[in-house]
Length: 184
Image (cartoon, rainbow, N blue to C red; front, side, top):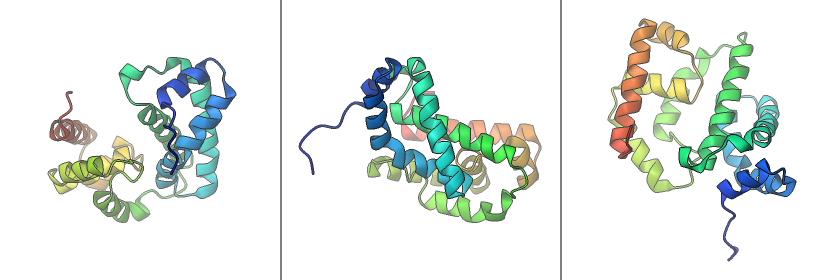
């Protein structure tokens, strides 16, 4: 284990905004495994996930000037870019059935909801908070925010209207924020 401190990700993103290619390489080296895990979980296709991973860091490079540390953690920003891009890919390839593994995915995520988080205490807290949600609401939330299901797809899956799904997602998010001790 190295005695050298790891570089601050926010500083690396700021350096990317100033077009420092070395900073981008370091940012990639430090975060790509976690970001790739998020993308792979959504896409379930290694080749497509590798393509999206490349796009994520290109977008991070292009939009580094938009990142503000006050708005959130750097890894959260990168994961949001990755998640949004992976969801776009899923939606663009509608021919692939999303529901075939939904039940297993929901069960896996309920058991291990944040495989990309490094802090086991936070993972345990999130797992405990997820367990407080109604089972259907929890599954709906996980399918929406991890697997990329649209509200319309969730409405069909759960036999509810889209407005009900929106309410479930909003209440679940609020409940999780409160449970985790974050302010809305």
